[in-house]
Length: 240
Image (cartoon, rainbow, N blue to C red; front, top):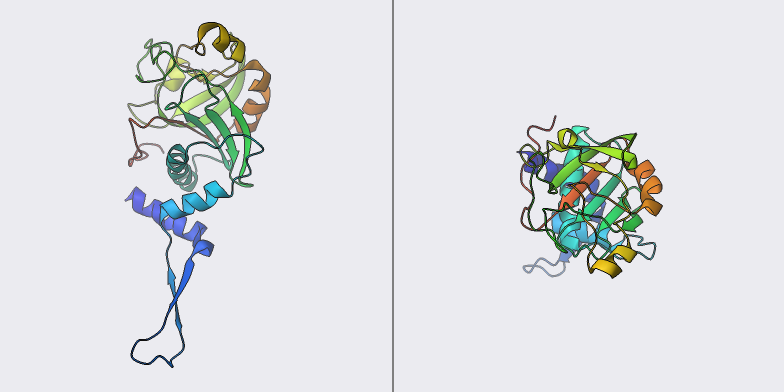
């Protein structure tokens, strides 16, 4: 039901992308051509948005992770759970040695930031491959989050996160899974250790971009942590 509602929302949002096709009546070629308007698929709308992104000279995210992020974003927006036209996309299918976090302004179709981001120490070495919602697992949790408030913790400036998927990431606040900075999230650490440093489950980012990113995404924007082992489903029934 929710997925059908999502498609209806996309229809309204992207109706101006409809494709106009023409055909001639084969029984009477003198009759005027008739225009047929066909609804675009979600995938085609994603491609339109994806190809129109202003990259700001950053790398583009993979379209697969971007598509999953957009699906959740529009559902969360429809339910009133997020207030900003901002998506923070973390792609844990990628090596931790590359920049795999994107902050995208969907209001202007602009990539604002592209950054390194750590996964949990028990989630994997260079690549993330094991995830958990359990306390003291020291693993990352996948799925959709809404950003919360900023506070000063043991890592300094930090951002609270609320997981929206029951059994997948809804223990985030209890576990203390937050966005913070760490000195092990740096190219220097990668150079010395052949991989990025790892957190206790938090999406830790470099100190030099923390303030700008946190102040951009705080207070009810969408954060999505992607991995191909888990694809989009009807996951927001309990997120009210």
